[in-house]
Image 1: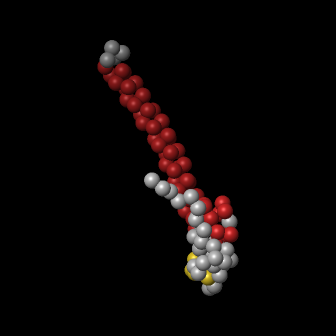
Image 2 (image 1 turned 180 degrees about the horizontal axis):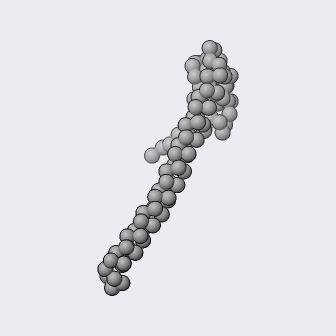
Image 3 (image 1 turned 90 degrees about the horizontal axis):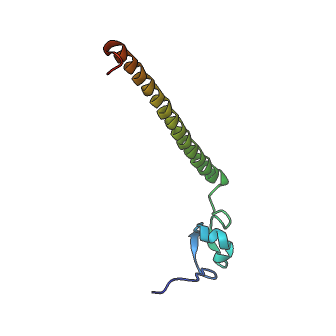
Length: 105
């Protein structure tokens, strides 16, 4: 079975938004050299796009991730506290039953 070892999209007639995956960031924008119709990260911004739009997406993603982390921490804390409460209630029940039935039960 053969696999792709080298990919070059330089000196072509590609146009539109450029892909911005890990591969492209490792090699750099030279992967797209000579394609004047390409734009977007890691190349210059496309016409009509603004940095504000990109910044908004980044802020939204960061807030979403932060909210998920907070929810997990709060949920874990609630489980920990509730487990302690249940154990405390069980101990009280056991003491009451021992008073009623005697220590042999």
